[in-house]
Image (cartoon, rainbow, N blue to C red; front, side, top):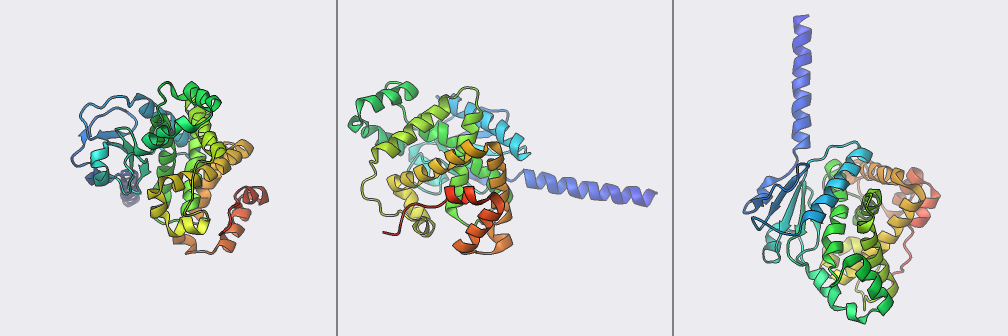
Length: 310
């Protein structure tokens, strides 16, 4: 009996140790030189300034989104959010431009502290949009219009969704476009779960404006193959990356409208199931076969890419 008790105790200790190691996945070497600003009881927060201002909405959105994701994914995810100013962006983020929200595979999200380059760029083009569209944006973004409500407050949900994937899949995945579609799906679903729909209305009104106005110019990349092959170059071409993201957002919104929370959990399960550690690198035909097996023909049709190689 004593030997049995000892064996059970050893197994319990090993399992508990593994669980603790698994749950504490944050790479805190990335926090060197940052201030621990402790703005949330639910996750870790750091910044390049000791007392940053105007982060309340971002923090609140992340807290609400964490509560939603923890529930549907059956997790209690620990993560860290790094608010980084434009001057120090390249030190903590893996890609420019400054302020582009990014999720790392090590439990960290990097968000802009100052006005993001994307927000500045898009705000400078707003004078070209029709008066009716301008009034709609003012309704959701205030006056003067502050597009960091989209590029930080809204996209923070997208990046948090990535962390719930990376926590279970690691660095390996079949396609970057599947990851980005999942990020958009998480962004839509989390914002839809909020009692206050301001965040969803902000992201939806801005994305719809981008789609309607078609102010992309000549895009260098338009196919999914190009998105995969040139992923980091596409990210640096912020308008080109924005164009891809509007395509993924449209798909995500349709998926969530048809299937609700269940598609978010099933999509994550699919990403875990079909990552390269399990299947190796598969071609598009095999990927489409797996998508149809997992979700059915209707989802496969929604995910069909409409843009040719021309």
